[in-house]
Image (cartoon, rainbow over all chains, first blue to last red; front, side):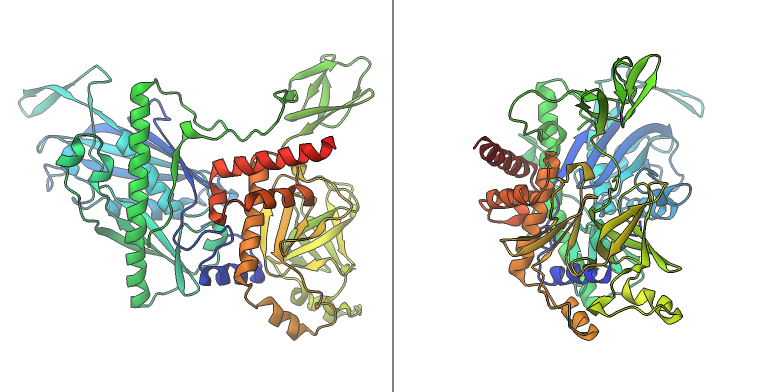
Length: 310
Length: 299
């Protein structure tokens, strides 16, 4: 992560603050900073979202393409993540500077989305063994103010929620070749079921305690952080009538990763994971509410993109 | 116990403008024609092209008789002699430190223009050049005064006064230098038990109330003092001041001790400091502060 210079006394101040459960902006160790979300910001993508968390700015676009499924998983679609760290975020990302961070984020996302309980790849299947949808998820990091993993995972889930996949009208089989006819009408499409898509929660160990949503200053005070991928609850993403038909799912941890040079005692790790699960719950609910609110607004009036104008 | 999460939509974005009258000053963009070149003088932020005076930065116009300047809204810090700045040591070099002060070029702090901790006199020797990292090392924050300007525009700083020097525990807030109001005094002890240094360069240092024990104590005691934990009430007041400053900055209001203190008083109606992170609360505080300032100006 971008290295920030801090004096030793500033670090002492931050560490004591975490110890007292009172951080420099008044948050406790389990509070997130306010976020701003907008979906459908890129008109030529199948789905897109932009998330701003204090100074962290992430733009995600989803593109769909038809592909042949892997021979060992004939009934499943594909999903691929690509992270680009823009040099606008910090000068250190220039050239190949951001590559390591980008790879670690995309690997983490790939791992979190691998389980069928996290993201059902079956819904991307068109014709078993022959054709499937492949989702390219492009993540652009425009500004980095700490807590990139959480911001990226939130934006990805929002973009997937926004993604539309066209219906297949007809399939022509000509020997071994398959010819698909897609619907021309842009509104004739289906939404993906992303309710249980995972969110990544970073728990930064500062002193003896773990904090969520660390700012860039806090990140530089910590030697190790745990990233926990926690699956979502479909119920938070349903509105109106559907809500009764969907049963509430239990949250599951789909992946765990660690960043940094330090080490963790098994007990700390366990409590960090539990803390992550709790944080994921409120985060997932808040995201679901925001997305449903936006979808409802778009039904009533035509969407007006706000984008980056402030 | 669950944490607090708030996700708002872009369509619910808060407009931070607090201007009481609806007349906003005319805003010039780079390359925009201001007037013809006749009878006007070209000032900062402008250039002449095709018999026209054009703006070279994005900002508002200032006119003094025939001189036209455009003052940029966001810019790097342009130093002036006597300014109080807060800076961060970037590098320790031969007989000088490189300091980051938010200006276009890094500033310089000469070894000859510092007072050693404890007020002890410096002996010019090789040892003391080798001891430089003991006084100030990379990452340390200092408060200093601009001593002189070099021809390339970079600044030379000095800390030859007891009020300047290395900063201990606290937090740094970075704002636009154009929002800092120039005052006689930039060191303030606020009534709420917080002391702030409003650097002209847009770096604001917030720390618990300074005790004047640094002067005669020995080095060990200073170190001991530096690692002591700040009490929770101090911490809360500091966080409140920090969030108030950020609220004023979001609404592009000028910062000085009065506006910060007013914002602090207005913010007291929010019990919990973290509520001040909410954009609506920020606007509320900025608006009330602006109102209070307007009232005082009218009197």
